[in-house]
Amino acid sequence: MFYRPEEGHGLPHNPLNAIVAPRPIGWISTRGTLGDNLAPYSFFNAVAYEPPQVMFASTAAKEDRGDTKDTVAQLREHGVFCVNVVEEAMCDAMNVTSGPWEAGRDEFEMAGLEKAECESIDCPRVARAPAALECKVVQIVRLPGEANYVTFGEVVGVHLRDDCLVDGLFDVTTFHPLARLGYRDYTVVRDKFTLKRPGE
Image 1 (cartoon, rainbow, N blue to C red):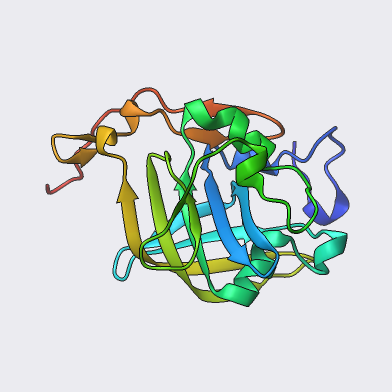
Image 2: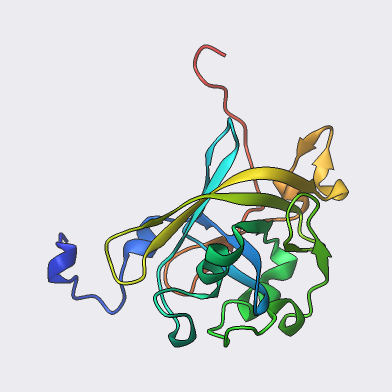
């Protein structure tokens, strides 16, 4: 099968998400004039080491936020955010925070999540997340499309849960990160293996 996106694929659902998978989930927390917000984004990744930087993309809009969703609206106001890592045990809570809730609704409370304050930015974070990255917005880039925005942030603070450190390494098998597949499908990281690059 071959198709051109502008001509449509003829399938029941868009296969793009399923092709680019699994994808890490950035559980983004923000603070704004309407309060605290928490929402998951699977168009997310780390993009640089020095200085450390991450990105996530928001690709939809809500009527009460104009051309975007709560997260990007609050970034425009406040300029900081926190990326919370989602573990398997937080799957249901993460799903609750993915809803199209009205602006000003506190998803931490809705999902029954303990909130903690960040150290270097004025922003909430998920207290029991395996890791959390405190970020300052570097740039918000508008992409083609009605509501496509990519936010780049510099990591200015890092929280690591103590039980996720094994022999000085952050070990994903201690908490099993959740990842997004296509459609409504997810997966969990349970296994890992090590490869040495040529020349190492």
